[in-house]
Amino acid sequence: MASERPTIRRSLVQFDFSRAEWADAIRGTAVASVILVVLVAIGRMDLVLPVSIGAVFTAVAESGLPFGRRWRTMLWTTLWLMVAMALAVTISGSILLTIVLTVPVALVCGAVGYLGPRAAITGMLSLVVFAAYAGIPMQAAQAPSEALLMGLGGLIQTFACVVMGVIRHRGKIPPPDPVHHPSVRTLRTEQQAFLRHGIRLAILMVIATTVSELWSIPHAYWLPVAVAWMTKPDRNGTVTRVVQRVAGTALGVAIIGLPGWLLGTSSTFYVLFAIIGSTIAIAFIWVNYDVGVSGVTIWILAMIGFAHDPLDEDLALRLGLTVAAALLVYIGTFLWRLKPLH
Image (cartoon, rainbow, N blue to C red; front, side):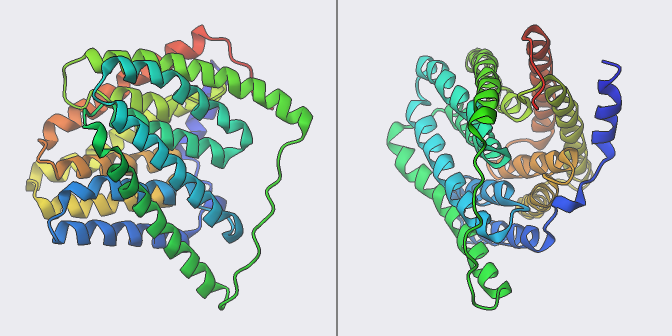
């Protein structure tokens, strides 16, 4: 633990600006903000969450990539978000199916990380969508429309990225950057590591999902969602991520909670903080995870505020369930022997 503490402390204050693409972060934020403002203005609050998630999560997944890989990552992320959404909504009315299907979904979303960091983030975001929507009982007939709405958000973001790329390259579309797949030897080693990660993630997600399904509190699905955000393939990475997640959540709760307490809440308040949250999330998730998580927290709390949820109760629930998830992941990390990734 002594060797882990300096790493954790550095992660809380370290900003890797080499991974920042400010022009694309501005574009991603602008697209998500325009979608939000238009839907609120026309009164289609029922469309805000799925379309906004598609736009914001797709932007998070592609942030910092070169143009040739950016649009392909966005399309793949959009596809898997849609699959996760459709499956989650389909089974959300059944507690048993939700618990049982969490196992293969978490296993695949965790194990796919051996293909690279972007595959890992796409798997994590897909698992977050699955956990969230599986925890909100809906009619199975809504699955296609909800998945298409999420896909719409992702495709709008991708289209804006391509247009911006063409403009920046003066009308020429550069060829796609080659994707360097890992060697067979590396693949075999990392496949085993990420397979172990997928199995451990599946166990933790089943525990969290079971508790959330049987726990009669608002937004109990935040427990498995937080587990999905925190769990990493190696012990040091997971411990660091746990600390970062709790710190980032607490920061986000303070940023939206204090103005909400002082000024009160309204539709304008939630629009403003949804834009602030998505801006922070897209711009900083690859630069400093703690700050990026604070943006995600602000954005999510603003999004559910549109459903007239009391903000003060949601603040306490969000922070409390995040701490509970942190304890679960921390215990699971040390009960399960993890090897470092090379």
